Amino acid sequence: MVSVLIVEDDSAIRSALIRALTAGGHAVTSAATGMAGLSSAVDGRPDVVVLDLGLPDIDGLRVLPMLRAVSSVPVIVATARDDERVIVQALDAGADDYLVKPFGAEQLEARIRAVLRRLATATPDAAVTVGGLIVNPVTRGVTVDGIPVELSRKEFDLLYLLAQRAGEVVTKREILAEVWRQTYGGGDRTVDVHLSWLRRKLGETAAAPRYLHSIRGVGIRLVDPSADSGTAAGGSASGSS
Image (tube, rainbow, N blue to C red; front, side, top):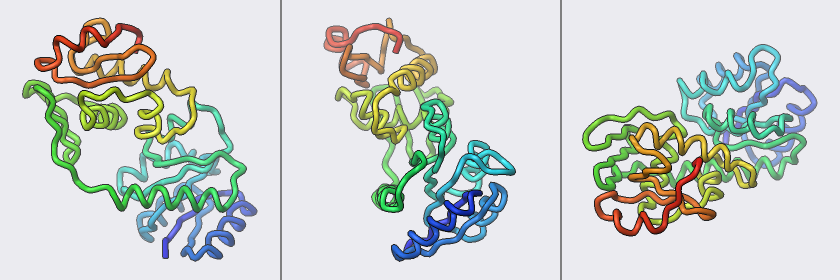
């Protein structure tokens, strides 16, 4: 039995979700405000949290980092805001998935299964080394030639994905799906911006790449500069990303 905490201020929506998830065999608790939801998440230790953004006391985008500071519980954001910027903010703040209202109970249950499946299969991995770059998923630490590099959460997730697939071209659609949990198009600018920040912190640029090479119209390839210096120049193209 999966325990689900619903943080939703609309009583009709909250009641409908409670009935549907309970009928599906889940143990469901609920809260109508952000602060009550935080308290329930910490005290009740649910398996997953379904979080509305439009809460009466504190916006869900503020609740997310507060929750992430004290818990790693998977969070599915349920929001009426379908603006890409808001969705990206929610994912960057710690959400594992999102649903845009209105949505059906079956879709919510599928998302719950998906985030729990990812959690169940996630195991601590060894550090990935590519040339002088070391990415440690356990400590979330990064060093380049022995020098620590401070990255944001999404910058680290992006770098770790690319490092795990070093030498391969990873498409922006794959990056959006794996790092931002977005399965639709339109997020290329988000990827480009984070790649630009990441390159700056790694001491390179799109015009003069070392590790991160853009393959025009395809995606990004992370390489060992010493091993790939000959082939990278032929396959990469400079640009804004």
